[in-house]
Every structure is written in structure tokens, then in C-alpha cells.
Amino acid sequence: MSITIVGNSAAAVGAIEAIREIDRDVAIQVVTAEGPAIYSRPLISHYVGGEIDQGRLAYRPPSFYEAHNVQALFEEPVTALDPAGHTITTDRGRLLAYDQLLLAVGGSPIVPPMPGLELEGVVTFATLGDAAAIDRLIGAGRVSHAVVVGGGMIGIKATDALLKRGVGVTMVELAPRILIRALDEQGAAMMTDLFKGAGVRVLTENTVAEIVPQDGRVAGVVLQDGQRLDCDLLVFGIGVRPNVALAREAGLEVDRGVVVDRAMRTSDPSIYAAGDVAEAYDLVVDLNRTVAIWPNAYRQGAIAGAQMVGQPRQDQGGIAMNAIEVAGVPCVAIGEGNAEGDGYDVLTRSSPERRQYRRLVLEGNRLVGVILVGNISHAGIYTGLIRYRVDISAHRDSLLSDRLSLLSVPEDYRKHVVRGQGIEV
Image (cartoon, rainbow, N blue to C red; front, side, top):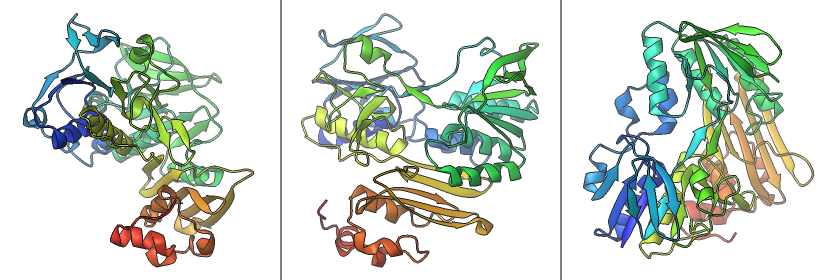
């Protein structure tokens, strides 16, 4: 039997490690559009911000593939998938057969089509190549002001990283507020104020309509409302779109992502999908959706890997979790932290003078979402309460306390954490 993995990031690593724990001999082949470096994408902002060097980006060592007996084809994108023939075709015309296939192709940055995208200084914020290009321009003293398009998680991380390098930043967000998918109005307002206090200009309900060129480089942008902003770096941090073209053209079931079951299997029983490309089970909302975060990708890859070598595993579901830092103040969003309306109870605690905010969202007797600004020390407890659907009805009054601990939560959950005993959900 042979296993082929298309991709070279967290989901691929999870699959390879799970396979080799079970089967040391099955043939594994990796085919990827990227180079051989397996790097940690969540650390890109820390590299651009000058907090770590490029060596610290390594997610696995250069010897990873050899150590795990994996044959790899680098910088060779897959252009076609034939489920009936059990083959893939690369851009070099190579036809490769497989018995089991994992699509771990991730997502691509969303960039609106417009002239000027090829100019020097116009980048996205998704890959090692992006980060290296930004670092090179800043290091050469060629960046004094940047425009960051997008006020979601990617745009926030890009902006904070540039601030740490002494670059002036204007952030442009199409929505009425930044972080609209992760934070409520109050949380977003706190993040906005922190950015403004650090010198960032935040423009909402606007976007870039035109890129202004000068001698092969970006010199500025024109916004939707007509105003011009001068800049020597333009970063598109709008978001990521799952790379579903290969799966869609092959006839697999595709919605926003490649639809998978709890075993990470697609509509074709020989093909699996994991990571940012997969539309997998989210236990908070109790349905499939794409959640593009690193831990989900690795976990899903490991489940798919085990399945492909005959060890049944079921995904218990992911949770949307994101962590950012703005001007030295951390923020964590877990689950449905910005949910509101009928069916939800919301508990909040705010200390603006301490730059702290806490928002808990309850649905019935269960916690389904959390926003933490400033003090994030209880994020682990809250995540566990959400993941294991713990009944917190008798403990509501203690959930916002600064003294929250395992002693403040139900006994069955304490036993689960301390002794590994199961809990009823």
C-alpha cells in the first residue's frame, strides 16, 4: 500500500507522525508546492517583529522526512486529481499513483484583484517567503510607513509585528470594527484604543481600491472613499481561503472547504482532508465548518494518518481559538465569544484602567465562548469547560472571578483534569 500526502505543513506532519507510530514500513510520499522547510506559520509575526530569528521558525528539523522514511517532492504543485484512477498529476507532468491520499493543501491569502500586486513592497502575511520579504525591506531601511489591509487576526498580527520594528502603520478594515468575527464591540474597541495609543491609524468601513506605483515599487494606495495614503509597504492580511480547486475539479464534495466526516474522510473513501482546507466538525456550533488554526490542523492530520493505516479514530471536534497581542496586551478568543441574541446569556467584567476585559457566553447550562483581554490566565480552564460541555449552572457566579481555579468548577471536570477520569457530556 502507498500513501500520498499533498502538502507540507501541520496537517501533513500530524499524519506522518501518526502513521509511523502504527506502521514503520508503509510507503509515504509527500508532494508539495513549497520548499523542504517545515516551519511554524503562527510564529511568522514574531519573526517579522524581530523577536525570534528565522531558525526558530522550524516546526520540524530538516531531517524529518528522512527520519520518518518519507519520499518528498518539493516545489512541485499538484495540478490534477483523478479519484477513479487513484492518481495525481504535478505541474511537471508527473503522474503519481496512490492507494490512500491526504489533501493537506491549506489555504491561500485573500487578495482582491487589482493592478500593482506585482510591485515590490506588496505582500501577503502567510508564508515564510512573505515574512522574509518584509524583514529584508525593513532591514534595508526601505520601509517607514505601511498600510495593512484587514483588521482580522492576520491583519492584527501583521500590524503589531510592524510596530515592534518601528514602522508606522495605517490599518484599513472594510467592516465597521476590527476583529469583527472574534470580538464583541467592547473587546474590539479596547483593541482599537490600544492600537491608536501606539500610533496606529485605524480606518474602518473602507478598503484599498487602487495601488499607486513608483519606479517598480508601491508608493501608496487610494481607498474606496478616494483618500490617498502614502506607504512603502502594503500588506494584505484580509484572511485565508481554503484551497479547494483540486478537490472540486475532482468531483469531491466541497462547500467552503472540503467536506469531511469525523474520520477526516472526504466523499471519496480513499481520500482524506485535514487542516485549513477541511470543513470539519466544530463541537461548539455542532456542525462542520473551516477553522484555520494550527492545533486543529495537526490533530486532524493525525486522525487521517491513523485511519489510512487501519486504526480507526474519530475527531471529537475542534474549537475556534485565537490569541493575539496588541501593544503588549494579550487577547484570547475561544469558541463563540462574540455571540449574542436569543438563546445566549452573556457575563462580562471590565476594568479599562487595567486594560482588562472578560466576556463569557453561555447557552443553557454550558459555556460556549470566551473573550479575554489583558488577563488571560484562565484561558485553559475556560477551554476545558467548553470542550467537555461541562454543566456550569451551579458555578455561574464564580466564572468571572480572578480567583477562578479547578476548585471553582464542577467536581466531575476536576476529576477529569486531575485523574483523567471521564465525564458525562
